[in-house]
Length: 94
Image (cartoon, rainbow, N blue to C red; front, side):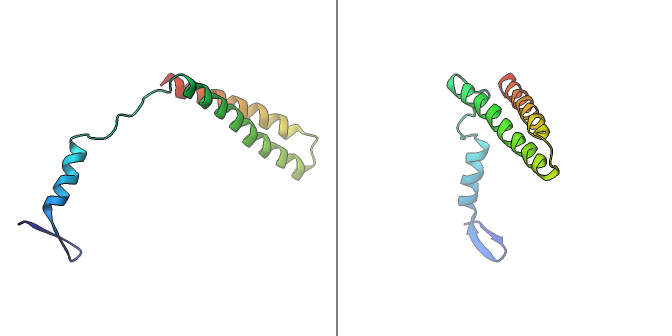
């Protein structure tokens, strides 16, 4: 029986060959290239709301830090919405 040495551990090559054979045979489940149906809609909503919440929050924090009257909040909301639209188009376009 063939034995492989890896850092002093003796291991049969048969187990390693089985792992490599499965990977090379491409026994992995197929990946979906594009979101479809409801998945695409939920992804779009998630990107838009997530972008607006995150960047709006950053803008709000900057407003509080600098003492501005909600200018950073407005810029953050608009920038977050734009980033959400960009990510949605990029994901759905493929």
